[in-house]
Length: 211
Image (cartoon, rainbow, N blue to C red; front, side, top):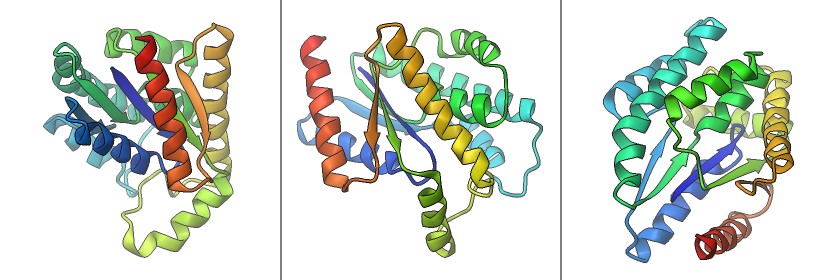
C-alpha cells in the first residue's frame, strides 16, 4: 500500500506522515517512510540543490531535478518495498509536481503527465492526503519559526506563488474526482493534530478494508 501526504508549506503533512508511520509500527506492520525530494543518496544530494535558498534555478531545471530525485526514490525505495508487500508512506510525491511546478511555476501539465508515466512507472498512490491551510497563515507560521528553521527556496516565495500551489492541489483533487477516483482526500490542516490524524486513520482503515 502506497500512502502519500501532500500540502503547502507548514500544512502539517510531515507531522501526520510520521504519526501514521508510528501507528503502523505499533501494530508491527511492515511499514517504511521517506520524503521527496530525498531518500537514496543521489536524491538527497539533489534535495540540497533544490531547497537551497541561494540557488537560482530555471523553471525547467527545477522540474528536471525533481524528476531525477523521484526516479531514484522509485527505483531504490518505492519499488523494492511495494514488491515485498510493505506499506510505503511518502512525504510528497507526484501531486507536488502538479501543484508546485505545474501551477506554481507554470510548467505544462500535459508535459508533467508524460514524465509521471516515465518516472513513477505505474507506482501510483492508493491513498493521498492533501492537508490545507490558508497560504497567509502558512507564511506567518514560517516567519514565527524562521530562527529555528532552515529556510528553503519555496518558503522565500511570495504569497501569490503559494496561493497558486494551493489552487493546484485543489484542481488535482477535482480532476481525480471527475474521473471517478477516490484516491485523494482533502483535510483541513487548521484543526488540531489529533483531529487531523483521526480523519486520516479512519480513511486508511476504510481503504484497507476495501483492498
